[in-house]
Image (cartoon, rainbow, N blue to C red):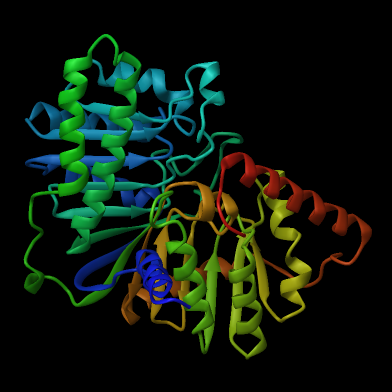
Length: 421
């Protein structure tokens, strides 16, 4: 390989790798019952700014309580910036606008879907799926939990038990990276909104464009708390975007599984991994690593269930243990490897998350944190149904797998995803 090509390959791979740093304090939070009180408390004590990005910001009582906390912060003089996804939050968008009307809360909509012709615009399948909140540059919240009541499902109504989901509360140097990410995505959505009025309001738009570029490249200006006051936890904030970090989360999963020596535990609702992660799972199980997958037992989308089931025979044949979570809906995206490596975030292990959507995970290398997450995995597995056999060799199973593969192929081509999956 020529020197120039080697340098280019190293540079591209460096952009894909997670950058770990010490001096972080990462606390695991289970569900909105633990997350929302922490988030609201942080917002109530905010002095300077609050940045929040989410796929779904619903209009139920739990969600509106958080909206009211944002409004109250704005009234105290705190700068509040909110970005929501135009598809995920489309059903509540009108009510949210009414709620924030008259306040200084600046809500930006990422790729809005409020007009029929929006479906014809390029890139509309690439959604904002991150769930991020940063307060004063001191504390950040990252995970898979949307702003909606844990016992409310948008398609199935209210449920008796809360969905299984996780987030983390983060302090330390990584907060700065989370803040830079949410500022960038808010600015991107806010600028996109202004293009609709560009011909009418050219001069203010030009001024806002300069502000957006400054925010994008300079990032947050407030320094985090001194590292000496924080714990020694080693962690990384891992993004998936459609720019330089297209495969970062996929690499993080695949590398951790490939290096596993004892255990791999993964909880994921939408599971249809590409070749690299499937191969890593098979090889890990073949060399004696206990590999457990906890997937959906209560399906919210039938095609998602088909996608996972299409791989059951292949994985079971290599000794991978597969469980289906049946007490409630499953929304968690977490993993623990060898009791020392753990991740919590918004990314599923499917082509939508790994090749299309904007996603964000926190990866932690800490035995204490991994032990707490592993205990949650064990608790969930204990109340789940183990898949012991499957009709994976029959004609019906082969047809299902072909349908799933065809659908995934067409979707990725329409979405403009690059590279093999």
